[in-house]
Amino acid sequence: MISLGLRYFLEVARSGSIAGAAASQHVAASAVSRQIAKLEDGLGIALFERQARGMELSEAGRQLAAYANAAALEAERVTAELRQRSHVGDVTIRLACTEGFAHQFLPMSMAQFKRSRPEARFHLHVERPEEVSRHVLEGLAQIALRYTTAQDDRLKTELLTRAPVYAVMCRKHPLAGRRSIGMRDLVHYPLSLGDHGTTVRQLFDAACANAGLHIEPAYVSNHSAAFLPMLPGSQIVALSGYLTLMGQLGSGGALVAVPFSNPEMRQRSIQVLTLQGRTLPLLAREFLSFMADNLTAAPRWPE
Image (cartoon, rainbow, N blue to C red; front, side, top):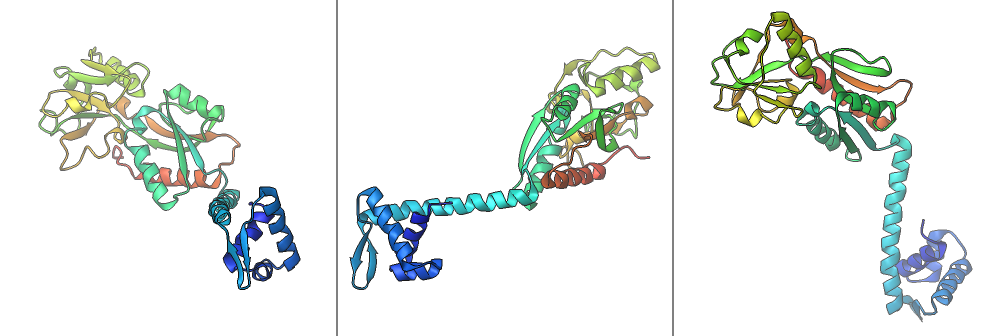
């Protein structure tokens, strides 16, 4: 990708002679000599000091050699990257998701995948559910993740896996030792909940209606993790999915997640979407498979 004159110039500098450069480039010595002369004429300065034992770089030649070596290395890097792209396709994986996936699951999945495929690059949009679908439909994202209570026939569902809503609370909360809880158990505790545009809120409202209850949440946000720092040491109960809480639960964690007995709170799924009829580049297909494996391995409501 560097000029012929610069390539011959670097070879003469390396070998120390016109003949040596010609032999390594498999051309006549006269061809190398003409290119060096043309380069020197164009710059108006001698690049070599002609000596009996060979060709030595002048001061100007050493400066040009430093530039030409850097240009040759950069050209080699770009060429290798282009060849790799021709094999794997686009190395940028464009994702869209609702915000519950952006706290832990997707960042961890991207970091893990990049350790095995360092050439991968990621572009992530975090949007509301309807915007996530639009990003795929308009080609702004290759893969989308969202919670859903109904499938979207305009898009291809690559994976559909159950994603129940849990009651999340401090480990010392009075309800923390229950195997499951119902809507009526929440009446006497401050509640943290998503706004009306979230699937959690839709399921909660349906469960309350079916139970004949009206529970006014104490804390409402469109950001599902906003109030989680308030839970340790408090009586607050937050409603959330498991993926939002990755790394915060377990035997050593300060929080516990208790499943609901109300069937409405289990009528939610994670949907992984792509555009119908679109063939994903190799890296995007690999990440889709990697991410699907992680999703199916995540804990869910027991059958």
